[in-house]
Amino acid sequence: MQRPGLPARAFGLLAATAAALGAFMATGTESYAAQSTDQSTVQTATPPAPRSSVVTWASSAYPAGTAAQDLTYRFVVHTSVGGRDLRIRLSNAYGDQPVTFGHAYAGVRESGAAVVPGSNGRLTFRGASSVTVPAGGVVYSDPLPGRVQPQSDLAISLYVRGAGTLATGHKGARATQYVAPAGDHAAEEGAAAYSQQITSWYYLDAAVVRPPRGTGAVVAFGDSITDGSASTQDTNRRWPDFLARRLLADPRSRLKGVANEGISGNRVLADGSAESALKRLDRDVLTQAGVRTTILLEGINDIKATPGPTADDLIAGYRQIIARSHARGRCVVGATVMPYEGWREYEAVDETVRQQVNAFIRTSGEFDAVVDFDKAVGDPAAPTRMLPAYDIGDHLHPNDTGMRVMSDAISLRALSCDR
Image (tube, rainbow, N blue to C red):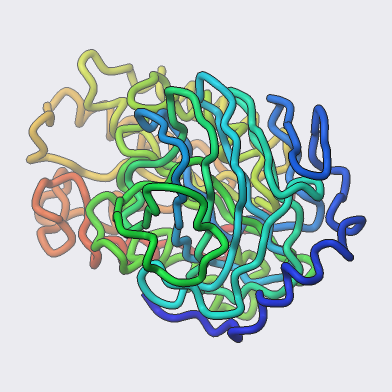
């Protein structure tokens, strides 16, 4: 990953100024049941996004196995939009018991698990160093003064002091993460304590910043293709990553933030390894800070399921997502379902459903805009198949080149609508 351009001392001022800025940090946008100088406790309702903030990174949370405690995670997240006053969002949405975070720090990743010296700043929660998030709860940190650079790697360190049995997280990070297996090492800038490596994020599901006024964000809402499950690890080559770089380079676009809300195996209508798109829409899309547009690429897992829904069933699900998004003032871009003949679950009858669904996406006029991923990656000589140059080899997931082609197929102008 590229080393960010944030000066080494930029985050170093954060911890020193946190106490003096306590009144500024407590904006009142979070919902807390109680607080003290040492620890805050949050309610289970998802708090509203902080005012004037825009999501710069996100990852969909889902049940992530057995929880662990008395250890420190150091998560590396790659930003999209830059701005000031970093906040993180912690989720215990699928936990069976409260989770207590003893300390949380954010700095600029140097390399591996090491943080740029002087940049590791202490995060607080309503002024407290520790926060307990009950089962089902979500919490934002206070703002961390300082500037976050676009397209930079942040190191977010979380000391999990106490946890229940079930963890909330995202297993398919496609990026190396680090664990100090015993004790609180969140404040340490060095990498020595972080002796274990994983490829999952736990509890951390969003990071937001305060960018220039008028800046907005896009959510990529989808399944394993959006999650980048076949992209090269540690290279940020998922199609939403390519899109983020295009948006940042476009001086005409006010959309600069990109949140990747893809989950492997996700369906529109039915639950699987995670809740359906219909169930997770509010938490993963509609409550994310500064989001103006959603690109919806979901449906292939519904179609290839046994038994699968009819085209009308799936279209009804799309209509719910459109209606709920429009009610919140969000634009929705419909992405056509990509070809997958050759995949082990492919059946000709499912291809009929895919074609019917894609016809709705292209011609109904119910989406604010359309991106035709089907045509972008399809083989012109065999339209029910992905072009081999874009195929990872399983005939379902695009490789890095295919991910770039998907991003290039998106009209940046079409991502904005009048709502």
